[in-house]
Length: 84
Image (cartoon, rainbow, N blue to C red; front, side, top):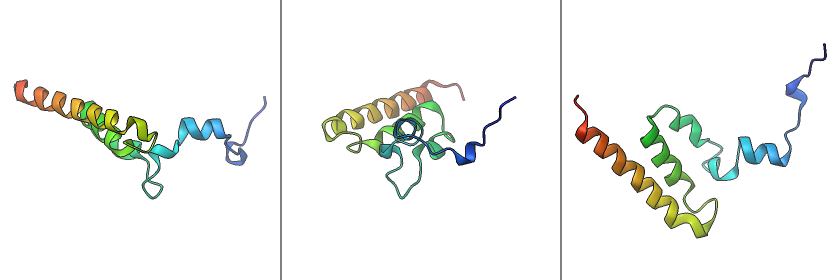
């Protein structure tokens, strides 16, 4: 059986873009996922889109903010129509 010591593995650029993309680690090394995993889906996605707005591409900044607003509105609707 072959074992690998993953601690000695240097991540490739592709792995870094998948696991730790710069548009999600732009806030002093904090990763947005560490916060959003503690939220429900709508709130987490809203935070995700706000946090990366303009960082991934300046061309998509407005689109990211509109997506965040969409998730916030969806969460508001969920709360307004919930039974409890």
